Length: 345
Ligand code: GLA
Image (cartoon, rainbow, N blue to C red):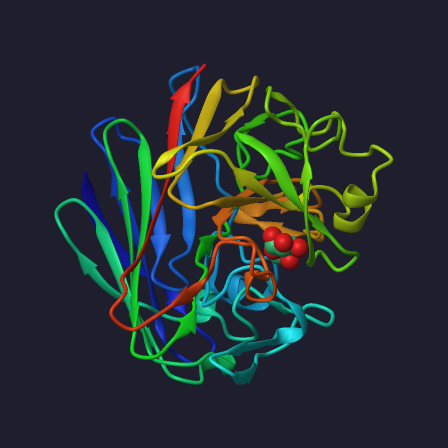
């Protein structure tokens, strides 16, 4: 694994943004920005032996700053939604930025996707670090974090998140990469085969906020236990699909520890992506709100032109005591890992 860094551009307030390319011995590579720890490109071998970039992104910092959608970004302090941006911890009420209808989404108005992170290049990984101050977007306590990325010779991209705090707080990190295994900017992903190791998912209301109910996937369009094309049931007459305008749901993953949780396959390129994670859930999001925009290398992106597999804790866990806790306490070490493993069919 070798790492090469260069300036990518500047933010609107003059901060330098660097791009790092991590290349493995096969010549496959991943590009990452220190702005938002963004996964900017993932170039892996296709069945013809050439490289395909399977990750959506933009050519300039200005586009990353101006556009919504969190393309490729590391997301926190709390990924996904917190109802009305309010929660109570140890008897104290906290109010967070509200940026998604009535709710808080993906860390608020200035989440970690908008931060220029400190960088350290180690021999086997790229490490980003940042301290989120007490009161940041309304969250309690200082939070010290590292996010590291490595890309090994088996074409395995490993994302590793660590954090400690000095006061009880809530933490739920994810990565918001939009994958298109046919190649970024080539249209929709509805032909991709998806398999997810989940018997259940969390029901959403019309604002994509969990109701607290856990539903079985059996007999529903959410049954991905056997691989099926993403588009097969996406227009089914189902209230949960309507509430998400497609798939935008937290699937409850079987098993524990670092394990295989999902497999995404492109018949066109032969590229297979196996997702592995330590996290209890994954938000399967079929880019339902990806409005028309310019993508990398003068491509065009629109609705369903990518799929996010956002490994995470369940959304709005602060309001549902039966969901795994997202509370982090001083003295505890938060650690989560996610791997995207690229192979060929
Ligand atoms: C997440 C949400 C979606 C949407 C995207 C960003 O995946 O669940 O509803 O907000 O982020 O556009």
